[in-house]
Length: 145
Image (cartoon, rainbow, N blue to C red; front, side, top):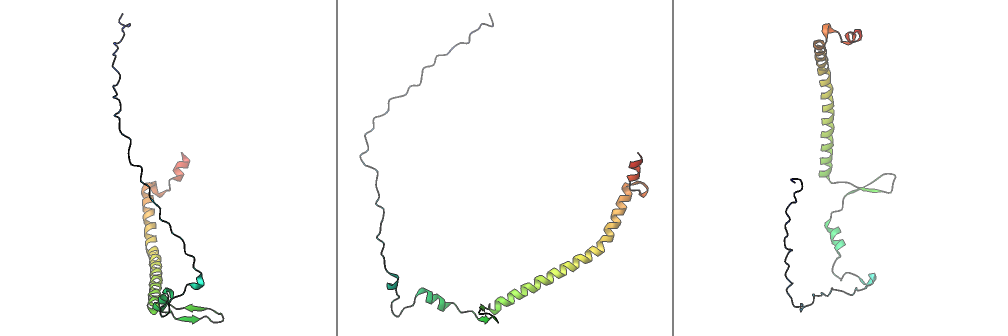
């Protein structure tokens, strides 16, 4: 009879949901906005001129900007602008320093290789002798076994 026990059932009441509150209908409608519009004015390009006694923006910009010196390239019809002196000095100095640094570093690296290569080779031989018996490479012992 112990196997035929029925677990007790619990009868719970369902949820109690109240009726919705009656709300009056809104009086105001959603606001509407008027989008701004404009009529495009069509003016012929020939009619657009600057008033007498004034200059255009392009002319003002050109007048403010100094004209660079130009050099004629021989045997061609081209003129090439020449940079200002300060820019040329800066570029030449930077180029000279970078070339000098590269050549110095290359020379220094070659000298270091010459000096350290014999030292490293000597260390490698000593380490190899410690790990092998009687200065053998250890390959002969492996092949005889």
